[in-house]
Amino acid sequence: MRYRIRREGDNLPPSAPTTQHGWAQDTLRDVLLEAYQEQRRARLWRNIWRGVAVLLFLAVLVSLRSCGSSGGEPTTLAKGRHTAVINLNGTIGDAYTDQVAMLRDSLERAYANKSVKGIIIRANSPGGSPVVSNIAFNEIRRIKAAHQNIPLYVVAEDMCASGCYYIAAAADKIYADPSSIVGSIGVIGGGFDFTGLMDKLGIKRRLKTAGSNKGMGDPFTPETPEQQAIWTEMLDDIHQEFIKSVKLGRGNRINETQTPDIFSGRIYTGNEAKKVGLIDDYGNVYSVARDVIKAPELVDYTPEDPLSSLLGRRLRAEVEAKVQETLDKNW
Figure: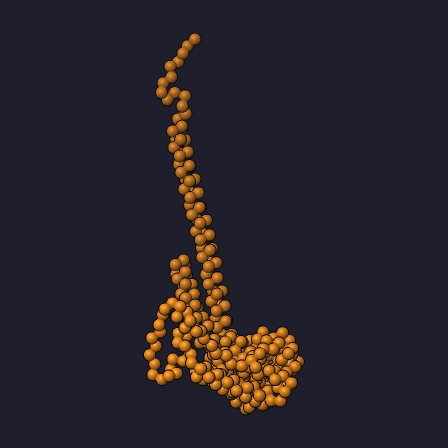
C-alpha cells in the first residue's frame, strides 16, 4: 500500500482563500446595509412624528384663531333676522371683567344691527357688587329707552340672584326655568371677630387711628354699639336702593302685599318666583327666541374677554414660534 505524503496546499481548491475573503466582505456588506436601512427607518419615523407634531401645532393655532375671533364681529356673520344673545356670567364686579362695559357695548352693537329682532341677556350669576349692579341697571334702561321697538329679555339659567337680579330688573321681561334660583333681594356684609382669641393668647392689638370709627370693621378690635348701628344703617340704605330699582323695573308685577318677605333677601325657585312676580314666565334662550321673539337663530354678541384675548394672543405667538422652530430644524 502506498502512502502519499501531503504537502501543504495539496487538495485545497485554488479559490478557497478568495472565497473566505469574499464571505467576510459579504457579511460586512450585509451588516452595513442592515444598519443603513435601520437608520433610514428610524429617520423616516422621526420625520413622520415631527410632521404629526407640526400638524397638531397648526391645528391648535387654527383653533386659537377661531376662538379669538368668535366674539369679534357677529354682525358680519348674521345678516338674516336673528336674536342677539349676551352672556352675563360670574360674580358681578369681579376683578377680571367689566360687566357694565360688556353689557353696554354688546347692547349698542345689537341695537345697531337691523336684523336683530330681540335681545336676550343669558344670566347665570350669584350676584356681587351693588354699585356695579346699579350702574348696569341704569345703563341698560338708558340704552333700551332709545330702542323701544326691540324687546330686551333676561333669561335666568341656574342662578340669577342678588346683584344679577338687580340687573335683570331692567329688562322688559324675565324668564327662568322652574328650577332656577332667583331673587335674594338683600344686602350682606360681614367679617370676623378675633378679639376673644387674642385675649386667650395674650395678644394686644396696636392700631393707631385718627377718628373714632376709622378702624371700624377691624377683626382684631372690639366693635362698639355705635359702630354696629352705623353698619346697619349703611346696609339698609343700600338695600333700599336695591328695592327701589326692582320696583322701578318690575312695576306692579311685584306682589309685595301677598308676599311681605319678597325683599327680605330670601331666594326663590323659578316656580315660586313666578307666583310672586319676580319673573314673567318660564323659558330658556331657545324657547324665548323661537316662541316670543319669533327669531330662532341665536347670535352671540358677547365681546371677547380681554384676559382671554391677551392669553390667546400670547399662546398663539408661542405656538407660531414653536412651529417655525420645528420647520427650520427639520426642513
